[in-house]
Structure formats: structure tokens, C-alpha cells
Length: 427
Picture 1 (cartoon, rainbow, N blue to C red):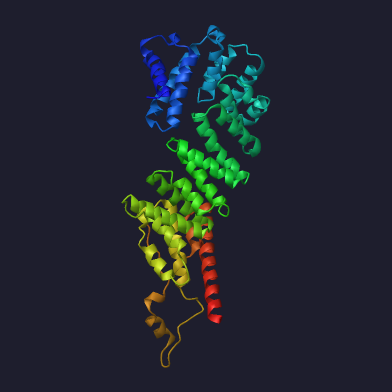
Picture 2: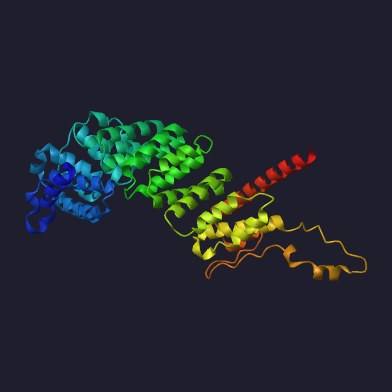
């Protein structure tokens, strides 16, 4: 057992049996330290500590409600109050407790800024906390202030916000603060168009905090960055980072990347991610994931294999897909069928002695557009035409954009292949 775990055991043994002793017997700063240790354990993957975190928040709330002026003669308790406020504390309790104190200087400023932040008054909080230098604080509040300030101004001032995130990481290494700062830094470097720094931060998070319960937010930002920096990050760099993950995590990342790349028309990246997801599933002896089959089929389309791809798309069971991927599948089938269908102006030649009506009757069924398979019960029927599909299925604008992007990317690839083939024939 490491020193953090030993310390946690000692402190928690003092705090949790509070029902059997008076709450006033425990100093507030000790309870907040226990809370911080539990939160750090959670950041490092101890999900079993989540209920303990909630219980400690409740106990600490009760302790601060009962705290008097004498408690805050110890400056550690004031620092603990501010840290607790920025760690998910109760805004009402913080406001009531601060109203009993006569704070001066930076402590008064920090108290007002934290209250504004907890109330959702972000512009006001940013203005109040602006003169506070987190690096000049001599207690635990510095790291939290840096994280709060960086989170508030990130949307409008990514460069200063990123500097504040770096300060938070420096002041609180190995803690939930560092985990949050790393995670929130990724959108900032996306805005600043810094692919190299994006890779460094992603690798740091992957190596240290991938077991955090908040890692799904990192995964979203990571995949978005790979799509955004498509031309700046190669497949080897992606594989280097993803290889640090467990097989299930690798599969999830590659499937997300395959889908986003497909929607964005990045066919090469979609093919790479789909194949990596398929191989990961093979290595873990899992069955074929219908999502990987779907993305790989779309990414492999050329003018020569469209019939083969359509057949593979038919093998994907819509019932095993999410509603969004189900619409993507139906759109892909519709596009493939549309590509195979003859132009409306073209009619089969009428042989001598044969009427047009008879010719129409004898036209092979394969010449007709491929009918779209009916979706599972509860899903709207989707016609072959993409415009009609979006209108009649009630697909939201984002999904219609995805379908249009898919059609554009597929047709663009087909046109490119056709041009290459035409050039070879002319040589």
C-alpha cells in the first residue's frame, strides 16, 4: 500500500464513522483532505470510491454548516472551504459560511470569485479572479484557481487558458486537478491548431488517467482532434498512442474514429480505423462488430466494387446498430443502389416487333434500384432518395448533413476512380 492509500485509510477511518461521534470533533481541513485523496484515487481509476466521494461531500457540507468563527482562526480551514467549494461543494453552504467571516485581501477576492463561479456567473467570476495569480498562492487553492480560471476563459482566450491549465498541472501533479487540466487542454490546442502539442497531451493523459471515470470526455476530444488534424497526424502516431490502451478501449477509439472520418469524407482514415478495429476484435476473439463492417464497407467503395460493397452493406444488421448508425447504413445502401441504378433517361432498346410495354415487363429485376430494407419496429421507413429520406424519416439537420456528406464523399471517390480509369484507357 502506497503512502497515499495509507493516509487515506487513516483519514477516512476518522471521518466516515461520523454517525458515532460529534461532527464538530473533526477539523474541516481534515475532511477536505480526505475528500481530495478519494478524488485522486478516482482519477487514477478507483471507481469504487465514487460512493465514498458522495458521502464525504455530504459530511463535509454538514461540517462547514456547523463551523463557527473559531474554526477559521486556523487558516487551513479557510483554504479547505475554498478547495471544497471548487471540488463540488454546496454553493449555499459556501455562501452562508463566507458571510460569517470577515475576509480581507486576496482571500476575500477568491471567496467572491468562487461564489460567482459556483452560481454559474462565469463572466463575473472571470473578472473577479483575473488579478489572482495561482502560482503566488501558498496553499492548495492555487491549483484549483488555475483550473477554474482556465475553464472560464478557454472559449475566448485559449492561449492564456492553456497556460493556466499548465499551472494547475504543475501545482497538483497526480491529482484529479491534473486529470481535469489535461482533459480540458485538448479543446484548447485544437482551437490553437497545435497538432504536436495535441499529441503530447493525449499521450500524457493516456499513460496516466485512462482509467478515470471522466476518460470518455478525453476520448471524444481525442477523436475530434484526429479528425481535425487529419493532414498533420499520421497513422503511426495514432497507433503509438492507442496502443497504450486496453483492447476494448482501442476498439472503442478506432470505431469512433472510423465513424467521424466517414462522415467527414476522410476515406483513407476511415479505412485505417475500421481495419484496426476489426483486427483488435480478432485479437480478442470477439465477434465482428457491425459498426466496423459498416465503416469499412463505405471506406472501400470504388466504381468497380460497388456491387460487392452493396452486398456487404446488406449483411449488416440494422437492428444491431444505434439509431444514428442505422440511418448511416440506410443512407449508404441508398447511395450504392442509386449509383448502380441506370439513369432515368436510359431505356432498354426495343427489339423489332416488340412493344415498349412488353419490353418494360421483361426488364430484369436487377435493373431496378435496390429497395431499402425496412428498419426494425419503431424506426421510420426510409426511401431510397436521400432528400426524401431526410424529410420523411424526420432526421435532424445534423443527420441530414451526415447523409449529404456521405453522398458527397462516395460520389467524389467514384468520380476520382472513374477519371483514373478513363485516363488509363486513353493511354
